Image 1 (cartoon, rainbow, N blue to C red):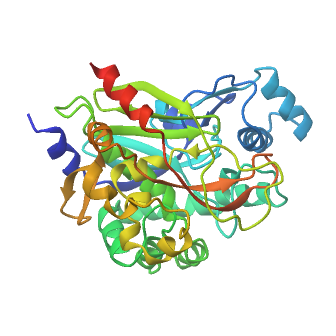
Image 2 (cartoon, rainbow, N blue to C red):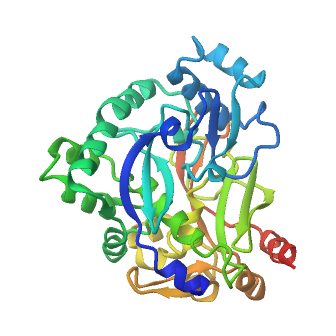
Length: 379
């Protein structure tokens, strides 16, 4: 039987298809997915999640206006549940509903799903209700997702590891910056779908959700193996941040989600929302906040907000060398405890009011006691 590390390193994730959440996950019309661990009270979600849920409800045609949509959430008329428990990962405050088109990333008979992003502007991940958002969602559903579905059906799956490896060499950290990866993806589809390639070039973070699904798929290959202290699931929901280990992958170990820190690009009247998003799986793989040493632009953007030990974290906390990515990978909670050093997670900062939206790029550092409790729980 292969070791957990061998299983993890053998994963070659492929972008294989596109399907709605209803088709891919069997998601019912009134069931909606959010990032991170379970909410304390799904009828009283954080404002950023509530705003995204309202937009999803309106997009599904379940309410006539924002007030009715809010009332539906408050009354339990829709069910908000963690995406990772359904084999799906969601960025920031994104809420997925039955109509949401999902990318299917697969390897060795396993699949992980992540949403197809809107193009040329933000989507519901920003936790606001900005004007024009619903129009971009319609364009995603009616133009971008069908274009991808047709492309993949005609020309086959797209290997993601080579794109990620190239992007790391060109300055991406694959979390706060995916510009090079998106450009490489666009270049690969341009000869078959020029309009789609143009849309990707106008959306530098498009590769993010693909890499989220790929990272989650790689990490989950280690679950049930001989290294139970590897972190294989992670994410925040705005009120709690949680992790799960390979030895107990369905047991969320949670702590209160503190806001990421960073330079505000616009005012946040109500402050910054607590850490939110399943994209933390990218950092637990070893990219994002643990790959800033090879990403000059994010490194400069985070200057003044980096801990003194940031340059040494990857070597201290990661368990194996990945021959394709040419980087160490896989956060080991046991090492986190032994080194008394938590990993860095690159998470955008959102206005806590559910109206302001994106306010800056940030860094979040989970508390050490989170990893200590997770390791102790295995015993």
